[in-house]
Amino acid sequence: MSTETTGTQHRRDLVCYRDTDEAEAVCGNCGRPVCGPLMDASFGGLIRNLYTDHGHGQRFHDATFHHYESGLGRVLLAVGLLGISILFSVVVPRLIPRIVLATISTPIELKPALIQSSAIIGIALLATLRYQRGERKTSFRIRIRRGYERVLCDECFENRLVQLALMYVITGVAIVSFLLGVRNAIATSSLLPLRMGALAIGIIVIRDDLVAYVMFILESEN
Image 1 (cartoon, rainbow, N blue to C red):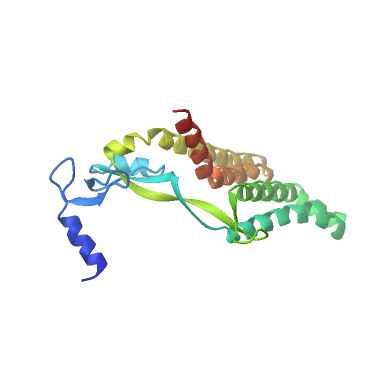
Image 2: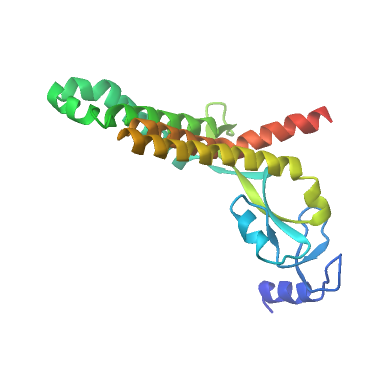
């Protein structure tokens, strides 16, 4: 019998800790079985939860419960974006005639939009990198932190409400920044306001790290 089949059979033998319904998952914190459908605690799941019944479990992106993986891809992306910023601010003005620069700089202001947007996202990507020492003193590895999608029972989820509120606030600020950038770009017929969209992307990139740091400070004080 496969592991998947065995796991399904054991799950069917469990009932929810709050009622007699069949358990759909177990709480990732206390281990109690919970019935479904699981409530989606993400920012995008708020509206869906209003129109669907849910059981006694919450599907939750936990920024404080994380693992580390290779950050090489993120390094290359960050270097590439910062390279674009440097290219248009330093290299391009020396290589391309002024008439061409005038074309890409006005009236839609493509050049400053590319420079500023690339720099914002590149810096945000670099801010999420972690450096881990290797076996030798001269060696090291670059890591990024990834949060887990967890299932929590209703009681354990109540202890994560502050963290969830932080996630909502940061995500909301990013969405507002992006929409303002698009609105101003349309109103001014210029690409320069799209740097607000780049700022929104940067906020989403560092969101999990920011939440983890804030929660660490709050828990340390308690």
